[in-house]
Amino acid sequence: MICVPIMASSTEEGLELMERAFAEADLVEIRADAFEEIDLERLTAAAVGPLLVTNRSHHEGGCFRGSEEEGMRLIFDAVDLGVDYVDCEIRTAPPLLGALAKRISERGGKTKAIFSFHCFENTPPEVRLRRMVNEAFDLGCDVAKIVTTATSMEDNLRMFNFIHWAVERHRPIIAFCMGELGKVSRLAAPLFGSLLTFASLEEGRETASGQIAVREMKRALELIMP
Image (cartoon, rainbow, N blue to C red):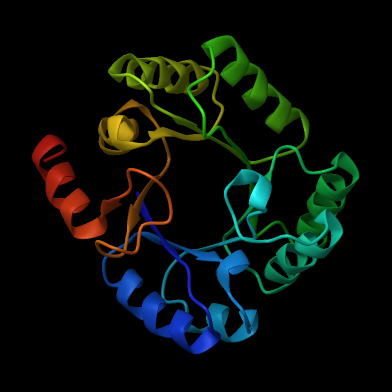
């Protein structure tokens, strides 16, 4: 599946971008940390497909600079609104992740929790990547998201091996490399078992290094996954 992230300054802009994104993507991510004002209820009500809500902290490449407790309030609101997925950093305080799991259970388990880890410097050794996945599932996630930065083409191969390892152990995984050298992993990760790959709505709206425009990615995937 292809996920298109939406970064907007206002709810109105977010609604317009969501409409365009759902026309192209399998899943849309609301990057709540980028909004100057956000009406999450209006945004979720307007969704015509699966929705993921993230409030990414600046420590992991996002815009949110408040406390963890403040950041998680919006994630709890998303669960209350019944979104399909929420994404929190693995490094979030365990009591907050526990509270999230409880909130999801209280709401009938409709929302799936993604616990994520981003490395902007390099692609760590596979043993560390495996350790992060095990930690994420020990903390109660439904899906682990591990995103690194490719500093060589070999890093993409390491990522593919890592995805294969996770799939063999029935660990639902989203994984790929960022950066120009990581573009091949964004395209090929689904072939190895990554649940999602991320694409920008259009050129100039990238939310991470190496992101490919969604129409370009769809054309490429049609060639390699007929």
